[in-house]
Length: 341
Ligand SMILES: *Cc1c(COP(=O)(O)O)cnc(C)c1O
Image (cartoon, rainbow, N blue to C red):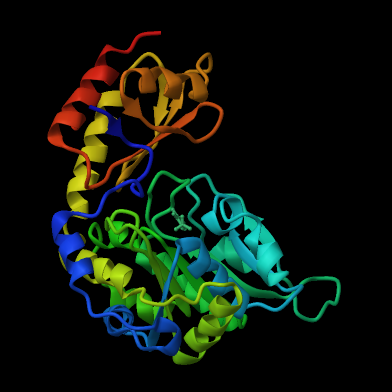
C-alpha cells in the first residue's frame, strides 16, 4: 500500500467517470463539432454566468491564454510572488505574451486592493511598462490552500476598473474555496474578466481545464490555442469526464478538506515540526525544524510508503484527494505519529 499525497492530480478516473467517457458522443472540436466538448463549455459558462468557455489541455494553457489575450508585448502583469502563473508555468508570461511581471510579496500569496493599487504603474510616464492585468489565485497553492475573502476581491475589482486593468483568476482549485464559503461560481463570474478552472485537480479528471470569459475573449483564446498546437479533435472523450466531475465531485471536496485537517492535526506539536500553515482546504504545508531538510524528510517517508513533495528547503506539502482510502489515511497518521529524529 502506498499513500500518495504528492498532488490532487494523481487521481485515476472512477468507474462512473470512465463509463461517461466511453459513452460520450464525439466529433471534431477544431470544426466546433464535438457535442460533448460543446456541452462542457456551455455548462461551465452557464455555471459562472459568463458568455463563453474553452476546454483546454491544462491549467497552464488556460492561464497562459488568458494572459496572452489580455496583454500586449511590454505591458505588465501584476501577481503574487507565489503565484502559479509566475513560478510554475515555465516563464510563460515572458515567453508567450512577451509581457513583464510585477510580483507582490505576500506570505499567504493572497493580494489586497491596497497593495495592488500601489503597484500599478502611472500611465503618463514613458519609463514604466503599462500595468494591464492582475492575476489572482484562489485557492492559493503556495500559500497552503488558503482562499480569499470575497469582499477583498470586490475591492480589487474596483481598483482594476478605476485603473483600466483586466482581472484574471487562476481558479485551478476554485471549487475547493467555493465549498467552504458562501459564494457561488456566478459571484466570481461577475467580478473577473477571465477565470481558469482545473478539472484534473480535486475534481478527479484525467486531463483538462476550462477558460471562461466573454465571447470575444474566448474567440481570441481559441485562435491562440490553435496557434500553440492546442486545437484538438474528438476531445469529448475527455470533456465527458469534466461534465461527470462537475456533477459528482464538487460537494465531496469537503471530505478532502476534513482529511487535510486531520493530517495537519497529526503534525502539530511534533518536535520535528516548526510550524504547520493554517489548513483551510486540501493542502497541508508545514515547516520542518531547522536541522531537517525537506528532501531528506520526503525520502524518509517514501521508504515507509507515504509520498509527499518538498515545497522549499524546509517546507513539505501534502495534498488530499479522492483516491485516498481510509486505510491509507489511518496508516499515514500512524507513520507521522511514530516518526523520530
Ligand atoms: C495545477 C495548477 C495550475 C495548472 O496546472 P497544470 O498542471 O498546467 O494543469 C494552475 N494554477 C494552480 C494554482 C495550480 O495548482
